[in-house]
Image 1 (cartoon, helix red, strand yellow):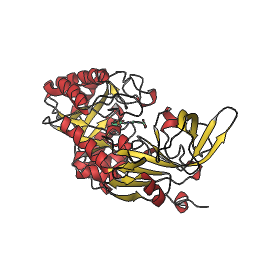
Image 2: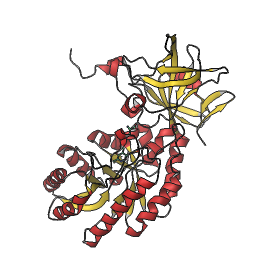
Image 3: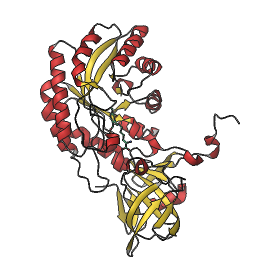
Length: 413
Ligand code: LLP
């Protein structure tokens, strides 16, 4: 059940009316449900049952300290892609020994920091990166644990901007080159192979591509084991989709069944890197109507949240449902809901049937917990939103709204 429900016509996060939060904190603001965050984690964890597995929450989806802290408290590990994310995980008291580091462009400085911090493993994405990691390991007098991220050349059947497992993608090493690279790594003194990794894309709504990719990767894992590589982990990446509109992604149980069917035989411990499926539907973006505007061609509703606050519609033409915080009766008209940013793509919802809201009305932009705040910017010198965490009848601000002086901090006139 969603943690965002109407009670007597007013939309609530758990037991708190969203209108009350908007009054107290202002808009635009992100609001997260603790029950949803922890619930999604538990359900996924339980779906993998007794099979040895480690959930490494993908920090990029929502890197807010309070969110990281919640997952850390539940025993989660973390999937990071930068020194900044490493620092955030540390700040949130995340377990470094359960942290994996991906990304095609890790610097040696980032690698050295992560190695010193004692991360579980590096997911290496190229031969040159492997050499760099070897150098970092030798310099530290240690062997850096790694897995190769292999590119299984599978079409994830998702938006092309978030598909990563095709041959033409910059991610991972070509599947055919993996065996030779592991063999090369064996001769290096600064690395030791600990796993195999893949991630084919995000917002996956079908199991077939997952199955196809993992079959290849599980085969590779078995082959490498047979060659004597001391592998322990098979990292299957993230990508499980969520419902934004009418998508029907596999349930966590169905996802787990698909994965386990393919990898059970390998004896590998699994690493999962879910992002969106844990946080996406655990958060909304609250926004207020500024103006309505009728042109000969269209009806516009101008709200106070822009593409700097939530870039997904502008960047991926992503659909986010808009719910009125107070239900209104009336005939729906087709409107474009737009933000204040001076760009034509600053459209939150296009041609959306809505009961025309009065000025000052509040909307909740649904499914905004993933890739919302973590992708927010200050473009147009707009202040990034506040963030609120709701827990039953209680709520607290977990990030204050940015202030003007934050905009030019570290600048010299
Ligand atoms: N692991 C790796 C290596 C990844 O690259 C990603 C996401 C994840 C895990 C987590 O994937 P998830 O479970 O969240 O699908 N900004 C885009 C999504 C970009 C995904 C990038 N990589 C969006 O808003 O749709």
